[in-house]
Image (cartoon, rainbow, N blue to C red):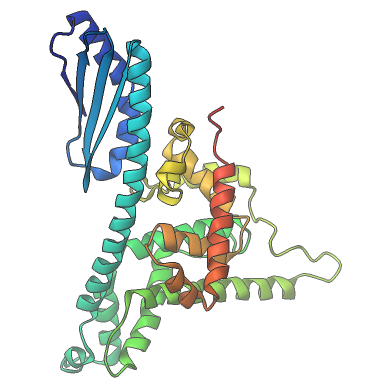
Length: 342
């Protein structure tokens, strides 16, 4: 990111001081704007001094869908710079939230189209001179190529479900879970006359699979424990303090889960920038592990996958108001876990 300064009539030393002060602002801008890469970002600055010696500073930056401009004036240049920086930062946060919502809507459409193109129609498969097992394998193989987001969603669910103590460590592997989901999806596809398979069906099958695994594990634990020393099935199978080391060993930067992914940028304190991606991921999973599977899955489907509250309620066979309350409670817990600005 570059600073493009236009300051006609301003002393060179003053220009250099303004640039130096604004350079300390660039890391924060880059952190918020990283999701818009590789588009080049320039911070445009115009500084002028009026006849009454009052400074007038304008900062502008282009974001997808909108150019943001703030103007501040005053006799103390440093104060003017700080006010302008803060005002621009707030505008960027708001616009980033708007852009993220639009991107999630586009993501849903693209994924739905990709799934339908991958599965084709039953007539396409019936013309193939291959047996049923081969058809199933080809169906699964084609879908695997268009579902990176589902893989990431499954990995997140596995991590937080293990932390919550609902499943033991290494009980599920993401690749095996997705293959199971796609095998179930094939059965649905083959039994439908219209031959359609919706993107949302895959997430509904994901919900059902995890609920089945959790229920089976609970039953297994109940059978193996005596009445006297029966332990809580919600007791963590690993300590939350151990999560950092466990997660860091399998940390994948391209799958990082950040507070800005879940909480609107406009509501995030500036202190979040002090946390690394690994620290943010650890904090998010620890907070979500205190909630039910339905609650944390609803939050992730809403904020990461772009599903509406109505869609999530349908996928989880729950009331929309219940889904809304769960998401709000999860978000509030995440906010309380953030470092304070004070």
